[in-house]
Length: 529
Image (cartoon, rainbow, N blue to C red; front, side, top):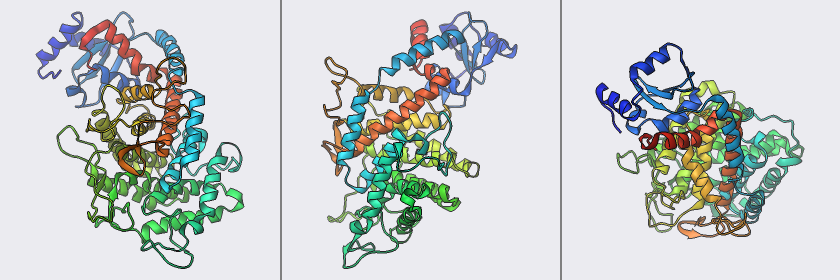
């Protein structure tokens, strides 16, 4: 509902709550009879209370009336939107009850173990390896995930107190050890400038794994950097040199656009939205770990440049979405351009942006890159919001977000949900508007058919999530997609941390759905969903 004049604003409030006037609310606020709610809680509540045409104009302030017979209020300037708000004591009991209920609305541990096991069986290519490493760090070793904000934010460079060969890190380190040990074998006989086969071994700039994509092997880089930092097998310098070779390869052997965007492909200049999860997180972590602000700045610059090529800035329904593949030559021997809004590509972009944001935010350089952090928070939110505007009542994305004729895709659904939880956590709750959408998607992915806890609608009996895109030909539906398996683990990890952070500050968790439920039941249709 758009409310333009003061009289219309007054009528809106009077119509819904006859006993409330703007003057009386303003008087109670100025008289100290209403206490401000936390910014986290206010942002969570306001998107349910304030009409969309108004709430985007400025930041609201929310107050709870100290007289519990009175409603709470969200205020934007002299516009007041009252709503019913439980007392703090009641809210505490409600939050405990809600957290107990929500604990049952998740994938069972046995299913997650199957998901993880299937991922371990199927990953083969460079980006699948890098994505597996990232998922395992988030799931099993959050102290070494750039994302972790709760109970304490991680600090980058990471601490060195844990042995890399024991405990939760052992699986990741085993993957990295194999990649680096096989690096010469993987790249043997390949001229890294032309990717043609020559005789002899390669030294110097080279990818961590052989791949026709220039960007994808960089996704393994964060795991290799961690191995070097933790001095895996007493050979930390070997792993750091491998990471440096990968970095030098990106900077000296890979094509760029005229303004500096690193090509996703090696054989010709072509940009893919996927690259945002491959190259910038590696550059940012390399910079944070080695105290190199130039690399951090370039991680941000790559995101900014990629966004300039991909984002839809029209005023239509697809505004804010990213296209998938651009700038290719169109020659038949090379991958085609793809101007469509591929859901997984948007997920790759949002998640990659948030990884860079998290890396900078948790590093020595946090205060040096405040403007860049603000930009990245906005860009990630832009993608997430644009994507959830496309989703239908199933809460599962189509393979192409705005194309209802394409198949449903669980992989992108999990990745966008993971990104939404991370956005909320990294913003300390100020960017929680899309959490209800992520929750609906997560619950949909956890839903069952028939009887039995493990009879899941979107998982096979042995733990493969489906339906999914073919990982090697994204326009078609496939089966057994390793990256989709990793995305499910990322979603679960992000959700668990979000719940833990919310249960410590109960208002942040309950505000998402409890207040919506109470307000809907007690005040009816005037609440804007």
